[in-house]
Amino acid sequence: MKQSDDKRRHPRIAKRLRVRSTLRDAVELETIDLSAGGLRCTAPVFIAPMTKMALSLVLPDGSGVPGDGERVIEAEAVVVRSEPLVDDRANNSACRVALFFSRMEDADRQILQAFLKGRNGRTGNA
Image (cartoon, rainbow, N blue to C red; front, side, top):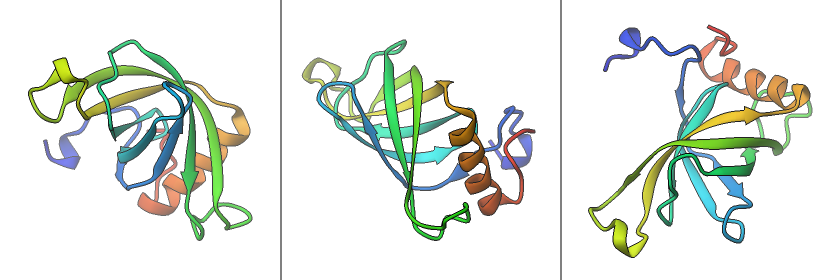
């Protein structure tokens, strides 16, 4: 789908960022893309849809947010889609996961929106 055909409420930006999860002893995730409403990422193990998790999203130095140093945003999220990277779900292999932010403090949401605006010129409130 072309970017102009995307009808999402929150525009996505392609950006690789580190994400830590409290699920299964702090699983490390890496974003594929990110929006104000959620993210797609890769995970080292299969994570079932509807799984709830707490996340720490690490924004890089020079991200365009006040303070301009590395920032960590805390959020709660729900897995809305999980696709094994290879057809090997039985062995709990790596997967591509789509997460919806179910809870985020207003201050963290503002930092995330400033970061996204710096990447695509929009606030993510479309």
